[in-house]
Length: 150
Image 1: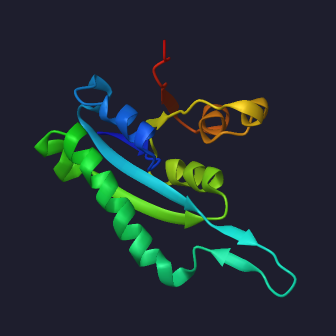
Image 2: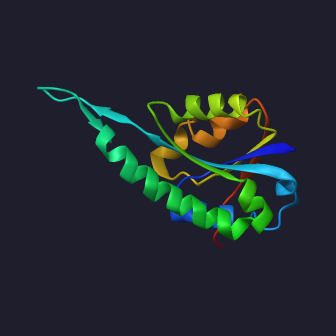
Image 3: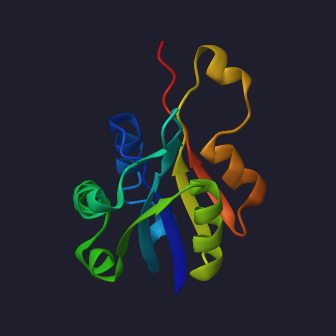
């Protein structure tokens, strides 16, 4: 049985791309791992650092994230696949490092990620989550690209 990790960004455009996985042969006979990694941000001020989100918010954020991922899983998976699937939410200072560790821990065969277009100055820098996976993933990477607007 192969392990397929599906990286779930919780943005609407990424959710729509992930829904296109319905019926994809790459998901057949696999354990599906729907994973979202929420980035922990540290802000500094003159008085003390501020960490967002705070640990007391973790359960609320995790529950909301899993609810969104469950709706994607229910849409994409057959009932048999849904029964075998796992839905995980993590909090990390470096989501890129956390996903790489997760892929190694579950011995993933494929990781699926939905990319998003970059605009303006953001497009000049090569530091996206998708690009990180393409370069450093210990397994094959399947990138879902957004449709070009005409």
